[in-house]
Structures are given as structure tokens and as C-alpha cells.
Image 1 (tube, protein in one colour):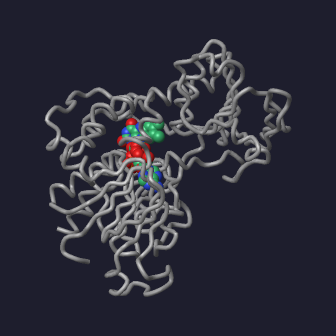
Image 2 (cartoon, rainbow, N blue to C red):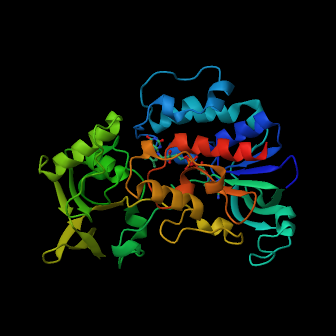
Image 3 (cartoon, rainbow, N blue to C red):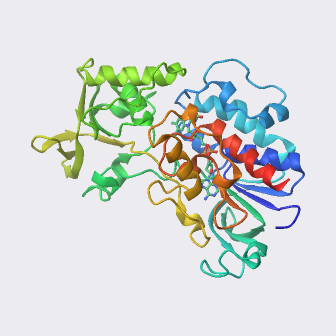
Length: 388
Ligand SMILES: Cc1cc2nc3c(=O)[nH]c(=O)nc-3n(C[C@H](O)[C@H](O)[C@H](O)COP(=O)(O)OP(=O)(O)OC[C@H]3O[C@@H](n4cnc5c(N)ncnc54)[C@H](O)[C@@H]3O)c2cc1C
């Protein structure tokens, strides 16, 4: 590892941008590769949703130091506000903008001259630079780096909706008719008719609340757990999160006649039926068919491991997150804990067998959905201090 690393930052979400600021502060050469046309592309895609963490928790010390005007109040921004008031201004700072390649997707990473199984854990492997294969607006390209931070998030890799985490029969054929992002309801006509909603996490709860409020929409909400607690946290200090739990409970209790919550249910199959989609649900009783116009699948997101397939990354067999971090998270609190009480990550948890390669941000949590921006900024601190 040379004294001054050349850093490749993959993804210009909040965590990638914070890593860029850290490189600016350290005086390290770096390049930010962002697949989207602008910074914060994933956040923009769910921009209509209000975060449940206030501005204070969404900002790092570096962001405060680099941006003159920064929101200080205790309000919770929407994703759009986070992008326009924080992420875009950060990406436009000259020290970042000069090193920003937008519309550039990193598609694969390797150690130059070495295959995945070669030079396991040796200094020779650590000394070889990384080669990145890029899809750019002008075609394919390659780049080199000596330290790689994979901050590519998870939002473009949704999980499927079938039982056990595999696609249900019919799901792949009907893929073009399934929405896997949080539905915006500013055009209610878009969701007129009956919607099948699958999932029970915070994204699905948000969708249920918003779709349930539309007068011309009926909702069939499929939830695996027979008695969901909706992730309730005693004396929750985040009111936005508590409100979601409350509204999900009310919907389960039948408060809205346009919403049916199928608890303890799974989607067994999807079929085309004229202009509709027929969903076969299995519950503790007999299978039941529902005829719907739209399918919204919000069963979670998991980052793309294909990117680092040629590197020596040890993934957790349960979560898909890097092994050390996953073990620490599961040991500290299990899979369903309060994200506010997670342990701060140390460099030992972030290391993988591939030296100088780190998965940071939402992607570092694999299938776990308790990631907070605050944790991502702490991860950046941990990596940068290990090299300075
Ligand atoms: C609806 C929703 C609400 C949330 N609310 C909160 C909240 O209230 N508080 C909180 O702390 N957290 C919240 N989170 C969780 C988390 O903080 C966010 O997901 C956050 O955006 C993660 O930041 P990130 O930088 O890790 O990744 P992302 O924001 O996902 O950014 C990744 C970036 O990488 C780019 N990219 C992807 N693949 C490639 C590639 N191969 N090459 C180059 N670029 C690539 C993407 O275009 C994207 O810009 C929420 C998440 C969601 C989905």
C-alpha cells in the first residue's frame, strides 16, 4: 500500500460524497464514479419520501465543514430536499466536481495481473493496483486505483417477492408490470384500481400508508409474518418511524375499508388474467386468489456482489454483508434491532481479505435494513484514519 493512495470511490450517494470530502481533507488523489447523471441518483429515485432521521443525523462533520450554508433545524428532509440542499451542493464543490465522473458505471473490479484465487493474502497481491472496468458515456474504459471504496448502495438491486426469497412463478414473465421502488402518489390516477403490495419493512409500510390514502385505490397487502409488530421500538425517539408503525397497526386492525392486510401470507404465483394480474396467495387456510391491476414489491434491497466477484471478499452466508461487519452487527443486536443503537464500526469490521478494498454505506449491511447515514459517515472515518 503506497503512502498516498489513489482512491476510487464507487457511487456518489451520501456516503460516497462523504468519502470524497475525506480524501479532499487528506490531500489524496481520488475519482468518484457515479452511474447516474448526477450525485444522489438513488436518493432522487425515492425523493418523495420523507426521511425519519432529522438533518442533524444526516450530516457528517466533514459536510458541515465544507458547506457554508447547511440546514441546522430538527426537521426531517424528504429525499428530494436531501439531494438539492446537501448532495448536489457537495458534488458541486470545486474540489469534488473536478474529480467526479457522472454517467460512469463501474461494472467489475480486479487486481491487475491476478485472478481471484491467486496470491491469497500475500504482500504481492496487496501491492498490485486495482483495475476497474467502466461503462462511460463514450463507451468502455478502464481505470486504476490503489484503494477502492464501494459505496454503490442497494436501491437498484431489489429482492424478489416469491416464497423464500426466490422469484415466484410468473414473477419474471410479469417483471415489466412490477414496481420495485417506492410509489409516488402525486398522480393518484396512476394507482387507480387494485394494488398488490408485498413486503413489511419501512418501505412497504410507507407505500401502504400512501396508497391507502388514495380514494380510487384498493390495497391487498401481503405480509409474511402472522403477527407483525412492524418493527415497533419502545419509546421511539424518531416520531416519523413511530408514525409508520402506528399507521400499519391501524391498517391491520381494519381502519381503512379499502385496505386488506393478509398477514401470514406469501405469494405463490402470479398469472396474467386479461388486463389484470391474478395473484395466488397461500395463507394458513386455503390458497386465495386476488385479481389486481398493479403489483408493488418492496421486499428489501441487497447490494450487487457481481462488482467484486474477482476479489477476495468474505461475505456472510446469512446477510451477504462483509463477514466481519455482519458478525459484529448480528452479535450486537440480531437482525431486527433499532438502527440508532448499533455499534460504531471499526476498521477491523470493515476489512475484507482483499486489502485496500472496502464496502461502505448501505451496501455494507447486505440484507440487513438497519443502515443509517450516520453509520456510513462513521465507516468513512474508520477507513480514512486507518490510512493516515
Ligand atoms: C426509502 C428510504 C428511506 C430511507 N430513510 C432513511 C432515513 O430516514 N435515515 C437514514 O439514515 N437512512 C435512511 N435510508 C437508508 C440509507 O441511508 C439510504 O439508502 C442512503 O441513500 C444510503 O446511502 P449510500 O451512499 O450508502 O448509497 P446510495 O444513496 O444508494 O448511493 C449509491 C450511489 O451509487 C451509484 N451506483 C450504483 N451502482 C453503481 C456502479 N456500479 N458504479 C457507479 N455508481 C453506482 C448510485 O447511482 C447511487 O448514486 C433510507 C433508505 C430508503 C431506500
